[in-house]
Length: 485
Image (cartoon, rainbow, N blue to C red; front, top):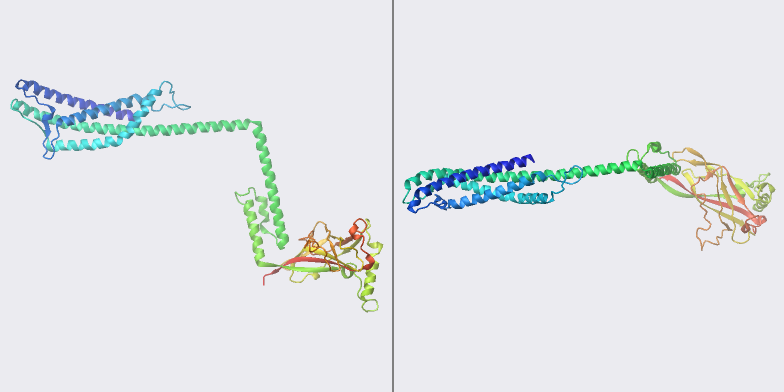
């Protein structure tokens, strides 16, 4: 603001000097007029001309233009002086009181707008004034010498010429001072806008601080914030648990330990920081894809016979001869009717085990895909029946590196539908009717299996005549891994 005021005072100082030179010229011309007025020859401003062969611009026109410039510059300086004290009038915290100053502020804003538009115009006027001064300095100025008062006019001609040069110089200085004042006003306006922006930011910051403090003292905010934090912690803990389960599933499917599982204990964020949960799951998925590229999945089946594997009916007699099939079937029916096979619920319960040597040598990580049960006999009733299959012992897996992995899993049971004598009566309606997947992904090799036949509560089993059974077979379909050929 001080720089604008100084520019305004400089402009007023040039205008004052301009008026002083104008007065000197007026006095000199008045002196010549009084001296030569009796002759009827009166010299005017138009008698001072440029001695230029291309153009003869009347001195009177330059004087009039200069007066117009000075009047405009003086008016602009006075308006800026009146509005200067209200340049930073703004409402709100950090501003000044604007009450009763709306009219002056509007006048100031209008002056600022005119000043901004006049910067380019002032620059053009400076250029023209500089050219005019150059013309005067190059060609000089002279007075027309009339018939009377020649001597007085000759003497006055030199005086007027000097004053004319000084006049033109002041005109140029005034224009430059006005131009500088417009520039300073423009800078002041920019600073005013910046100050307004800073005050607005301060108000917003203060309001935010008030809101934060109010929220901090609001008991509802504490409750909601604590509830949100607790929910986030609970959800994140569940996500960590799921990631750990996914890791164990990877180890179970591949038979390999995952080295980076310890980083879960250091994970605190889902996507940010290191380590984070998203990166962990992506790396786990990459490890599984790399495993599937190295090994190929294949299919296999293990057939467990009630006669040969579960009840272990002998094939060789005491005399060293093979026991006939009919005799073996008789022994089978005899054992099926033995009270020793009944459990406390009155169900027929027959334990057995599956052994590792039954799995092909290159079949690593053999796991159940599904199971099927077949009854063979002459009097098995209708086409419906159920046999409960339970796996509850220690499982064994052959790893890809040749080592053996022993697992103790929770007991699980399956209740497959029975098909009789090789005929699957319901396949046409339901292709997977006899494929039971309740034991899917459990190891094939296990030391404690049970076959349980309920003929007391299960009405579909009550029409099965055990004395007509020739064999019962459990088909265990499984998948295993082998290296790519």
